[in-house]
Image (cartoon, rainbow, N blue to C red; front, side, top):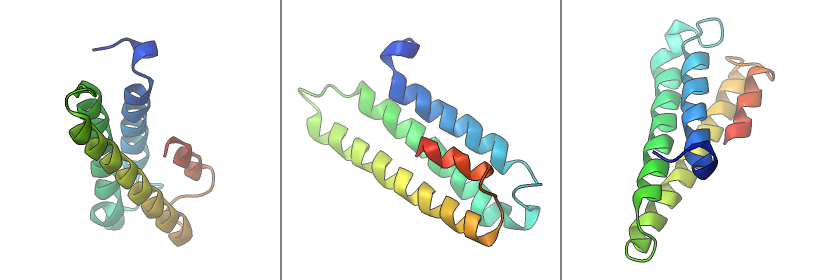
Length: 106
């Protein structure tokens, strides 16, 4: 695996997954009744982001550029979906504006 400086996007994706998992496991922020509706999808999306960032970085741009671009597009789509889910959670009051600062990652 590349070191911290050579893999900044992958490191941010990993940080996003860790942060998302910690916050969505907090029942003070996300009630258990909303676990399957919002917590698990947010965790799954952040895991998909990490997976696709890693997969894209493993593609050789010279020979696998289409695959790499498709993976990058999927990362962007997942980031957009995650942002929309977080906006819904914010509007429904599951998270507050202080917890909403994690949207910086997306």
